[in-house]
Length: 350
Image 1 (cartoon, rainbow, N blue to C red):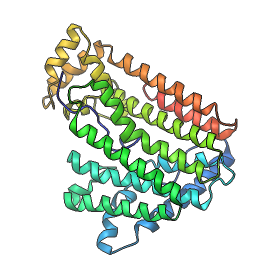
Image 2 (cartoon, one colour):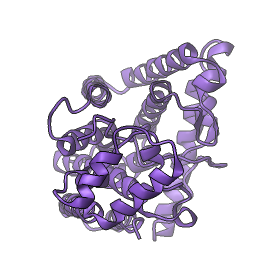
Image 3 (spheres, one colour):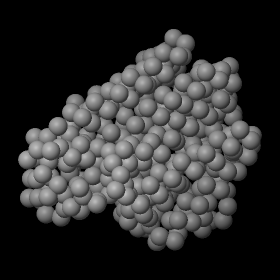
Image 4 (cartoon, rainbow, N blue to C red):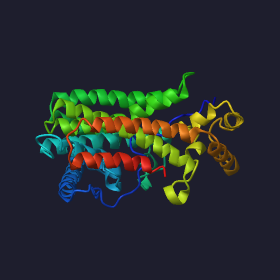
């Protein structure tokens, strides 16, 4: 088995993020009134985000707003806002603050991840470490965490305690990825890493959005667990797309992770097959692949393997979990929107 890195989660979130000219929500939820409410609240989040990140010395501000202004999906704050719709105080000022905290935390992880991955681009612009240097990027990530902590202090001890756990999981996931499987099951290692690096912050968005809207404990728990399941789905789907989709469909170059020595779930499943295909993959995939012919051969072998099928089985497992958590929530247009979101995430595979 290869000793290469096993997880591609450079960002703690739903796949690779592209540039976006307008950061506020432009998603249709099937309910015009809900869409209008969330759009309005997303603009409030955007305004508060840039306001909070503009506090401090000029030489700090341009660094910490670099990625925020570049764009991004803003999925986590949007989910926090949707989750708040199940409480007595939807889209309240504290909900807006909580959504901002989640996004700032996500931004901080991007700065730190780009340093560790030696990334040169993020969201269609030069990464902070590329534009400045590693020290500046690390310190920018640190000041972002300081901003998040300042806002958290306004939301009460329960929020602070929750984020202490969330920070711990995020760092544990990054450390777990860095040290590798250490002789353990690579698939189990992969699952733990994406749960800690990706799913935890999406779960946090559901938890904080609903909690600060005074939702019932049962509904808060359901939204947190739904978020965790969706995070797992999206990351696994993104990994399947990297291997098995055409560039015209996905916008990605197939095998990008293989070229970087990153072995994702479908690859790990294929490599452990006790078949000729599995044996050839274990021989080829010993680390980063630089020549196109070897990448093409690896992709051919992966297409012949059962890696895609097994990874999709995991996707459907987490989809069942997501649906079960939604079943604990009252029937309304928000619940329908969340269910459709999970379905769309799975359908990205094609």
